[in-house]
Image 1: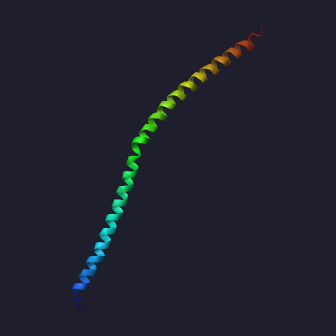
Image 2: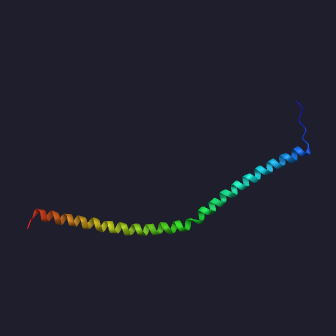
Image 3: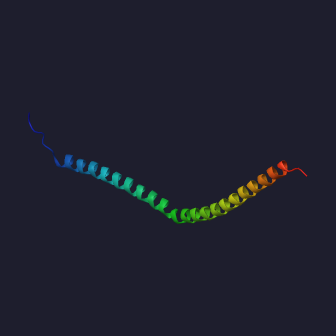
Length: 86
């Protein structure tokens, strides 16, 4: 089978096709980097929000523990009153 001869136009065209592909790949990479930058800019606010949520949860946990203790004490008082009516 005879080998095809390529002229300058074929080589130029091939270079253009390869160049377009490389540019497309770079654009895709840059878009991904842009998205990563957008997401990483959100991290400090997310960390602050998480810190605030942790603080809030400590308060909620303390209030819930106190409420549970109050309920247990209340139930104990009711039980004692039921056992020893006035």
